Image (tube, rainbow, N blue to C red; front, side, top):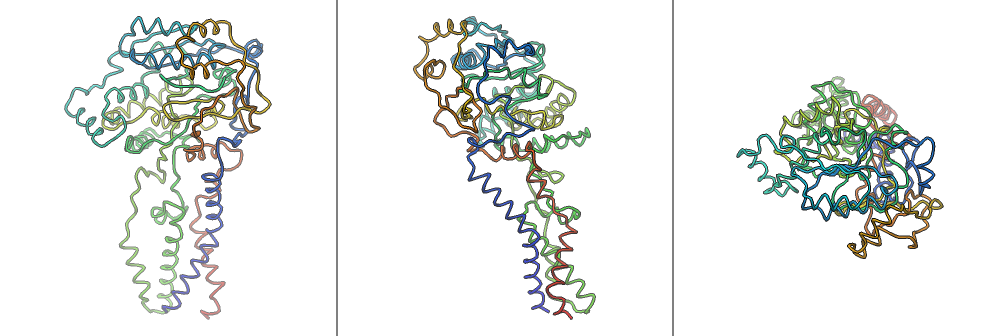
Amino acid sequence: MRNRTRKLLIVITIALLICVGVHHIVRTEEAAIWEDAVVYSSADRASKKEHPFFEGCVDTAEYLNHKKYERQNATFVMLTRNEELDGVIHTMRSVERRFNQWFQYPYVFMNNEPFTDEFQERVRSLTTANITFALVDESSWNFPKENTPLFQHYVESQGDRGIMYGNMVSYHKMCRFYSGLFYKHPAVRQYEWYWRIEPDVEFFCDLTYDPFFEMKKAGKKYGFTIFIKEIYWTVPNLFRATRSFIKQNDIKLGSLWKAFIKNRNVLLGDDYLNSFVNELEELNEEMTHEFLIDYLKKNWAREKVIDDELIQEIAHRVRRKVPVVEDKFDQEEYNLCHFWSNFEIARVDVFDNEVYNKYFEYLESWGGFWQERWGDAPVHSLGLALTLNAEDIHYFRDIGYQHTTIVHCPNNKEGKQLPYVESSKYTEIFERESSRMSVKEKALQYFKTGKIDDGWDTGSGCRCQCPDIIDVEDTSHQCLMQWFDLVSDSPSREESLLPFNAAELKVALANDYKRHFAKNNN
């Protein structure tokens, strides 16, 4: 009996390799291609569902004069402080040089303290566009419980545990404000669209078209340029709270939700087994035990002999416990991916709506903006997924951008580069500002005769001047892999692999057993 059981284990292993192995090999090979072999930044990932509005440069003068072009009710938005003036200047120089010298969209600067005269005068000198300086009221900026010992304990403990910015109360306030309050400010609410910018960021490519107009024309509602993972210990309970909100409010999720989850539904048709399988690699072991115990039970019923192997398998089943996986709910786990919200171009009403406002209030009730360090980026991302589909989102892959040490900068589009034509108003501003700029700033902000590379056939940028830094597409590709898969014209890799049908696997194993050992059993 024991020899027969050993043979059976061999057969099960072979059968599972046949049933699962092909899929596993495909999955492994695809993972190697996606994770190692491909340099994302030089690959063409455009699809019919999602692609750059334009590849390369547009004749901006012709674009603006086109009869169908409509300037949008839109603004730049920046939350900043008086002491960040140098960083604000750096950002505005970049924005004006790369885009706004031609389009003249207004700015809204927000602060929880009044802006100084020096700040306002200096900022106004950098653009001819309209500027609004808005004060954030105390109720929108301060936490209701921030003067309590409990609040101080939670914030200080985050610092003690080394959580990035965890012990900075002002950072918690900023994240909370951007998560659910900035769009309610009258200075922002009067607009239909906004483009969020931060102090001390850099744009590397000329944007020669109007992103607000193109998004409206294409039916897009939210745009990003960097998609990366969050640090887990800043948001340990955010996904739990989000799933709770979804369940309590019976939210019907769209396709965007798939961008932020790991599908743990590996085995269809057997909830018991599925609870033990979180990865495809675990399927072999679970199906082996399941098939073996079924076989031994049938053998016992037929021969009335209690096999030691059966006792061992029953003992194994009794002893084992369902594995606990952080943030796994309803066979889904948060993958920590999020749109980096320090750059976002969006309709104001993607947040200013009943569902998102209710979601923010619910998160407030959990206290995660101070008990943990919930960032506005993961909150925005999960909140958007409550109401939007993937088709509502646009990846501004053609916009070169840097914030802190993270950089995205596309290759120029081969054959689609045009000479730089400067706005006369910008020329006046630049001549006035040039004496204040460093040599590096001048090189980035202004060029007429400087050589721009001819580009790549897979490029998308216009007159990009990329720094010598590895593109975030090539260092944080796990999230982009999921995004590109989601907006691909072909079925997603996940849909083609998961879930496996438990009944079909069991039948395949039984048939394989009969095929190999029917004669021996007779």
